[in-house]
Image 1 (cartoon, rainbow, N blue to C red):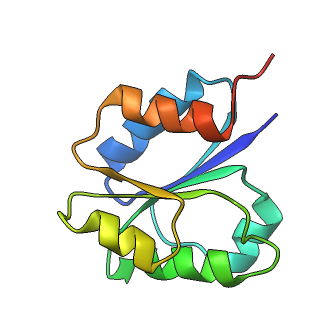
Image 2 (cartoon, one colour):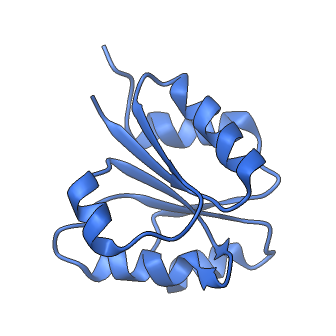
Amino acid sequence: MKKILIIEDDEATLELLGIICENSEVEIVLKSNVIGLAEIERMKPDLIFLDHWIGSSLGGDLCLEIKQNEATKDVPVIIISALTDIGQISMDNCADGCIMKPFDIEEISDVVEAYIGREP
């Protein structure tokens, strides 16, 4: 089974993202704070949804670490934020894409389908 890692510090948004992704029949791992690169390596996610502002940390910084690490560089990372310059932030941090908050449920589902596909 494929795995999606969602890192989001707003509990309501984290729960909503989890519910949307559950409909895709994948394993969902929810984290409400930034986790280390070693944990991400062990987890081996197939897709990461990453909030840009996570407490006092920046998701963009974690994204750049993920993309510069040999073991995780090919994992698709989608940065989520309400910032109007999220597109530029995503490009600057080597993200595979971005989604602007507030997001539409179909936007999330489309990304999951594009990167994960449908489980048989």
